[in-house]
Amino acid sequence: MNPKIWLVLAGLLGAVGVSLGAYHAHGLEGWLEKQGLDSVEVAKRMHNCEVGVRYQMYHALALAAVAILAFQQKSTTSLTVAGVCFFLGVLIFSGLLYGIVFTGVKILGAIVPIGGVLLIVGWLALAWAAWRLA
Image 1: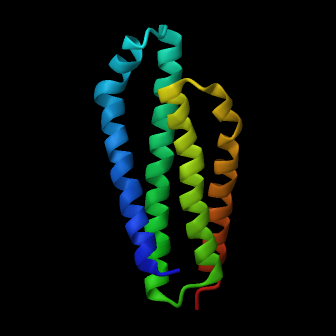
Image 2 (image 1 turned 120 degrees about the vertical axis):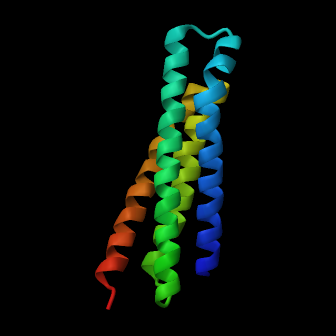
């Protein structure tokens, strides 16, 4: 895949991650309390949001690394796999955590591990791509 696309996606993930992180720090707790949630539920949702943002930001950087490697060398299958897994992994892992935070639909938590597996596969594909560097 074109390295420019990976870099654009990394930038978008980073921008959304910073935005959600700012909301987490400055407005989410009050919004959750206004929803009538008890303090235990508010704390759980705040934690889920923090984890989602943290993983999103880590993997925005990882996707930027994929883009940089792809710019430096001919794009490889392993770099493409890494990029796809990082992007889809963030959408599923962090996205569904955000879904739980904002909707309270806890069944979404059953799907979150699929995103985690994709993130792991992405790191393994990146390691393989690095191993094969000339």
